[in-house]
Image (tube, rainbow, N blue to C red):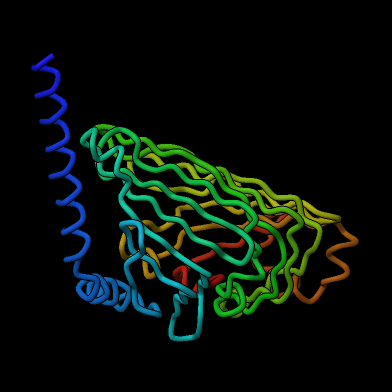
Length: 280
């Protein structure tokens, strides 16, 4: 009985010490230094973020009405972005950071493990593309549709690997321009695809877009890492229009004629960077 009491008392002391450690670490957490570091990382990619970060009531950091911008304007807007370390995994020796963001009525949750086997767990739903300024700022496009994504990445001796599923419901767009070339406007597209990560390298595996009179397939390497926004793109878009669809947008396909592989099949190379994609 006496040993049990000592054990409980010792456990209580350890729990109190751990709580005080977290509390003082949180109070003394240097948000100004985080802002400075984040600003420097984004600046070398031609990006900026506003407003500055602040602490939350629960241990964590948050941005309210966040806007990520390039020199041409906003590329991503979040009603709220919150980042925090999860306490239960920490007790087991794992460092897991959880990020929650709201974009319009949609939500994104990402859990990223800095150590251990589980590297990333992603869930996104209800992200209205019309709420993402990237499409207007970078592509000059008007977009509609709702993005859903889910996936898990695992860590091994060979690096991080896994799959992320993608789907956009009721996709439609107009005015997409990549460099000197435009893409055909389309509506009521059914889409699905997957990002496959192998040994830390990400590839978009055949993201398909299918609608009335049109079938397209986008694939290629996806830049990752701290310099993803300025890393070179290496992607291709296959466009297979039916004769009636081609006739309706004859001018667009006349300009894309140099990329025609066979009658009714166009293979368009997409180069440049994420912030300045081009058809070359």
